[in-house]
Image (cartoon, rainbow, N blue to C red; front, side, top):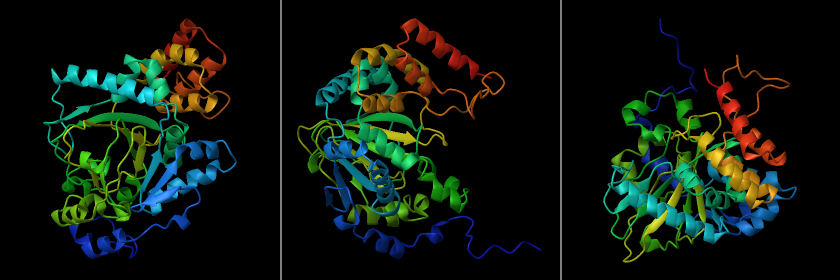
Length: 388
């Protein structure tokens, strides 16, 4: 006789669980400014934070309260946060833009340049723009990723030791929009695969990554900034629903867009229904650096050679002499902060529960003012101990 299923455990989602009425009710909820303590404004259900104010809060006793508010918005309210002027060093943004433009021209000669949810044509992608920028110009990379607010919002949703990955998306005038979707992990599966994962996997998939986008130019609505559907990340069977025509029609009828300025950053739950917009402008090459930040406890989308990045960054970081909170942000965006997986035979935990991580080594090397040769030797030993 088969076991009787617990009445409160559904088991697996299917298309039959995707109620358009329930979805429409959910996305109609509003977020009043009075419900938040630190937001400067709310536009189209999206809270806006002034990064100059945020940076002061991050240095105060209210830091954890701010991080808790961001997690609350991303998980339980509209699902989206905008950080105005997340990168204050706009020269670093411009210098990164020039490097990305050069990479695009180089890769157009050899790369297929595909996109997950859009057609190639006027659009261009740079996969692993994180590592490519770092190796092309470590100093620009360090200035670009020195933003305390970007590191903090990643920590707010994912906790410490998150894994930064980035991909540049350039949409020229005439560039077509993406189709509505959710993102990695379950969002990168066809429905027949997603339905094989139990309901609890659908619920925690959105907690394993954080999506972001840094504007590399001013992006008015006609340039096609990301189309967003507030509250949609809370629809439990949404990884299936996002691929159904009826829900895509609802998305197209109800999405919102926010104009962004160069240096602004947009962050949202990977479970949010969203899509890059169509560039209807005549003269705006809309470039964004897409951030996909992964939990230390999950698998990131891209493989990153963080050893090569850290090796290139070390001399640059010594020369830049960044404030500690900015230095910590660069380390969080580059080095591997989680000490696992490792080879416990050759890299046993001594004096604690885990060995020194790559990020811990980089921080210690800077504090001890190691020479470049000393750091390269220590970095190599750290890497070799972890190999099977």
